[in-house]
Amino acid sequence: MVAHIATVAFEGIEVLPVDVQVQVANGLPAFTLVGLPDKAVAESRERVRASLHALGLALPAKRITLNLAPADLLKEGSHFDLPIALALLVAMEVLPAVELASFAAMGELGLDGTLAPVAGVLAAAIAAAADERGLICPAAQGGEAAWSGAPVLAPACLLSLINHFKGNQKLGTPSPKIAEAGPAPPDLADVVGQESAKRALEIAAAGNHNLLMVGPPGSGKSMLAARLPGLLPPLDPAEALEVSMIHSVAGCLTGGKLLRARPFRDPHHTASAPALVGGGARAKPGEVSLAHCGVLFLDELPEFPRQSLEALRQPMECGRAVVARANAHVTYPARFQLIAAMNPCKCGHLGDPERGCGRAPKCGADYRARLSGPVLDRFDLFVDVPKVDIAKLGRPRSGEASGVVAGRIERARARQAERYARLAPNAGMLTNAEADGQLLEAIGTPDAEGNRLLTDAAQRLSLSARGYHRILRVARTLADIDDEPTTRRRHIAEALAYRARS
Image 1 (cartoon, rainbow, N blue to C red):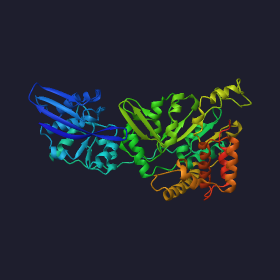
Image 2: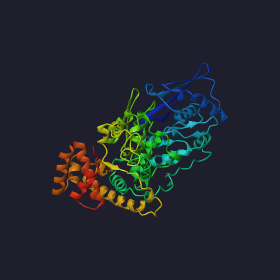
Image 3: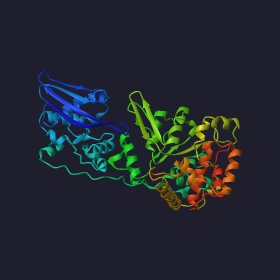
């Protein structure tokens, strides 16, 4: 007897179909798995056997051969438990093969037959919908799979699924779920002083620009970065689905709920290159992909391993992370905004008249040399965050609240969305930071006075072509904040003020 049931194995966002084939034949009792299973898949034999025993079902005392086709594709993870169990139940004539043929399945089985969540349900549901199939998944992830539009069955245990197909009970259709709003981010008005840094943060948020803040310890760099999520608009539906799919593949989509807030990732400075860009045995997405359509904050930037920082160069430029391994080649979206902070030198007191650096200026030069020129050239904005005057800390708050600044940012982004929808309707959701080529020339070319200033500054500052284009992008964002249709001289001048000084 041979039974087939489809499952879904995924390597990143690319979803690959896998067919589970079961043969029950006379011979010595044995349960054999073939088709390049890893340890987790091989252990599914015992989980499936125990879960069936908990339901009062025993495997036939015959030789059972189970093939995961195609046999040359490595099978990884515990999500094969459910399709293996269903294929066995079809072979044992407990479940109807005809009805199950229109479903893909994935889920981890407990020893008592309960279904535990697994990674990648949203991606699998979308792949199943494209194949005109439904999806069977754990109950905890039914709300996640429901966003695909495919028929979804989300039982809490294997017994509920059996009763559903036998007509003893009916499983309800899960409703799509959206993550609830978390606690409100801290208010920008809490930051004392630092008006230049606040202005740079607003520009970065309005145009999705990369920002590097340099200042002594305790000057407020991390405080400013922590307030950025409160300035950004929520994800639009298309972005929310894309971001949630990445988090689903990584196994960190909490409660099977679609994300609406933009991601804010802040890995520790000991993070390795695979942790940032993606990789590992299963080529999982890294921090740059988990921050897709959101913010990646790197505090103490020069303390990150040199290899990790250099690995960021390609994702920062092209908006995707390519993970190439011997057994996997996966491309993840990685259109993120990089916000970074660093001290001016190793001890952090370079330029401080009260606590001068004992090795100045070599201490600062050596510390900055940990960052390569190409990495620094990919930042649009550089801002100094000086030490705060202690006398100002006890005074009443006088700065703008996050809500006021967020309103200007939302209006600026709305102007960008309208402009790019008209000029590049097939490019997806763009911000000024992603404009390039002819599109950048069409939207960023300044007026005559601004062009003269930019040309002169490019020669004096020896700007690279990348640096030149980043000036244009920042200036275009400044014009959007001012609701100006044309980039003017004052916008070019302010954009130049945020370039790094050597």
